[in-house]
Length: 87
Length: 450
Image: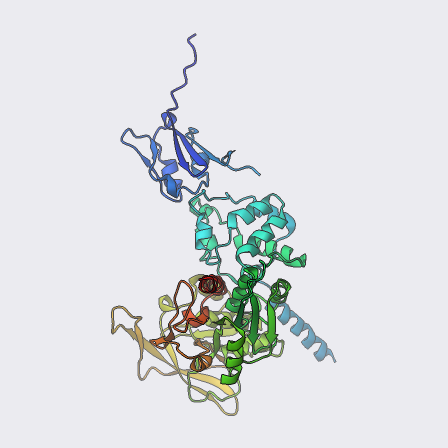
């Protein structure tokens, strides 16, 4: 049996002040679910049909993309706290 | 005797229905569960949509997040930091078109977080503690006089006191609150929590001179002599008077007097058939009060169509759900009655747009007159700004009949005078008055510091 291969996650980091939205776009399959649910409309598919953040300055860090994505593409870090925010 | 007892029971039922709040308080457990639904949106540079929608700039995700962590202290401090009338606004704000309409959960197909009721939970918790949630800065040795103890005046006074100014508020009424106290429907707010809010302002230094009219040249000169800046927060006065024949008949009311009498408990019966004239939020409120007084037949008469109504559509829908009938494109001709109102003669109108930029104007359709029987008719056509005082102030400038005010500072053409609130916008929401109060306070601070 060969070794289990994990697809390269190709992480990209988008920063707004001290908050960071990271996308593991290597795992994106271009399903559009996050694009439809982003309340500020800052997600789009790039030419390679994978997700990209078009304007991080407008991100409100609601974490809906992270909840919606079936492929764990999004991780939000706001002041060292991962989304969805825990109390 | 039996009759008396039956009447008393009916009266108790009626008053209970009258004060049954549209937005009742949450229990501690309910607040915890509801607050936990909030996603606490907001990045370091991009504010949450609910905050952008709030005219008072309340940091909603922070106070809701605090409630979700059972930290009511932080929640109360957060709401009063931006809105000194948090208890009032939490009850009367049209959240359906402001913060709750902006909630991202709504886009998700879920109901928005009940921000209004959570705001009330935080504010009431704070007011019940009888603690002062703001502190006054060291004295600036400057004095500001605020004329009018309505929401704009109260908030402006509080914010100035917090900045270290000595502030005195004058109002001809004996209680603070202005139209909030006297003209807001009882099912939204009775007189609480206004008194507690005013008490908090007094605690951090605002001086109240209530029952004192400043309506003569001498009185104004005395006030001018004691102040570095004066705020004209005089708001709206009585109802706009539109005269119809038969106006003087008992049973014909103006909206503000009607609401005031009901709130004071002096009027508990409006008869079976009630007609309300007007298409604004006050007209809808009055119609819904009439329903709560037990009138089975309440009709709202408006000279334009439903889509031209200035009232909030959701409140029109709620009124319809409570059984209010609407006669659109209908205008009053005269009140009928012999010693007492018995009916309103109306006629149909049609809308004609004479200027593409203005609202279509209603034109009467002659020969369409008809009669609506009525025991009570209430005119709710709008209120007039109190302009009487403006004639006494030197150097004010008016444009199209409106006082000219810098929209960013509230300063008038006479640099010592500032104004805002209903005076500026012709009558809007309480939270819009709060926004003005804060804006004027910042404007005065900038002007006196310059």
